[in-house]
Length: 424
Ligand SMILES: CC(C)(COP(=O)(O)OP(=O)(O)OC[C@H]1O[C@@H](n2cnc3c(N)ncnc32)[C@H](O)[C@@H]1OP(=O)(O)O)[C@@H](O)C(=O)NCCC(=O)NCCS
Image (cartoon, rainbow, N blue to C red; front, side, top):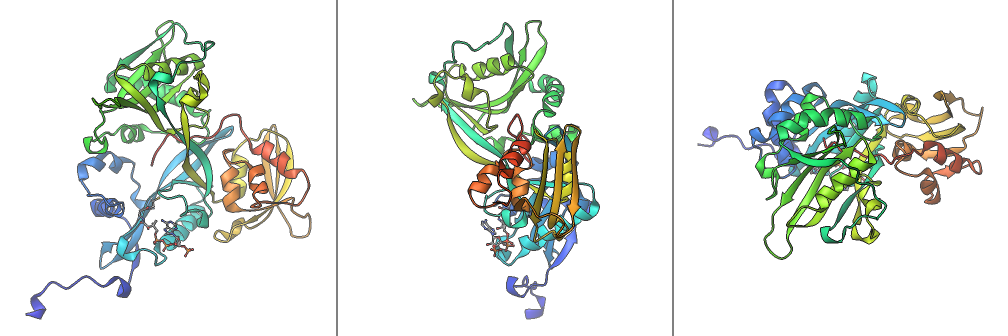
């Protein structure tokens, strides 16, 4: 009797686990494990577009008895940094099944992945969205791209009298008409949008993938274009409306709003705020400098709540620092502590100027460091979204040469705060 029974799966505390890379034919099992890790049911059709962007050779996890008990992956993308772009490992699909949590699996996967990224020598930076903000700092990820959730009542959103709405118009267009027009508009703004990621055609499909189960009662995505005086599209908007026939009224949720010109941005926001029957607006992931905050006559009509945005991790510090531009000339030595990727630990000299930046390693004793910081904090200031001066004031970065923190903070700043409109 006992011999004919299906063997019981191994108890988690006795399990022997193996780190295994994904092969394309096991994709569904892997996706199912990821979705389960986020406490959802796997429905293959919902994830169809993700198959195209998925990189099995960068996806791995632990298995027990041939079953995935943890998952981790990365996409190969390009990140806009101040004055340029850099290849980035966009880290994703990180889960550990509940029965195996808090046994160090995440730590093992993070170490494995970061070494792998470094050894590939392709990407000096890794980037991720964190489900919970306390998780990734221990692996050197810094809060690089702070964002805000903006919301308010549409009735109280008159613009300042000096706002120029231009002489063009906003037209709602069908999804299939909109996307080919939005693509080049997005491409235009991408180089200025530090923190954003390039989107190839497959990523465009993922971006606007819109299964009904993910809408939570809202409409499908709707699209609108701003046309300038001559009828040329120069801005775009993607939004949803959630109907509510009670007194509280419907809510419009802005998914993406961007434009080549200030006039187009203002006109697109006006279109959103003037939708009939709609009483409330929300933009969940908005840049810190979203125009609507400045356009309104009553600043208090828009509520801004902090959101994490993306976390960056410098994997190859010299390469990453040389890939961006700086706002001021600087000659600074920084002692970097990186307990995980120890090749980064040591004193680096960073010289910035109009031509770009040069990083050299300083032999111990030659020159003492002006600043001492953990790679996590260097990663946080990398895109100009976290202030070095604030980290010094908080006691997280040590300033050894008086005044150097202010000079370095000024050089690392940028004219626009970073913003990542791409969820991955
Ligand atoms: C988050 C998750 C991946 C952690 O995996 P894990 O294997 O339990 O993590 P580890 O055992 O390696 O923990 C490493 C450290 O992180 C801490 N940690 C883990 N999850 C944490 C969390 N959610 N919040 C705060 N700290 C956390 C642990 O306490 C441990 O701390 P220590 O180094 O000081 O001991 C897992 O809980 C999970 O899959 N959660 C649901 C899906 C999810 O949120 N994925 C992340 C997507 S970005």
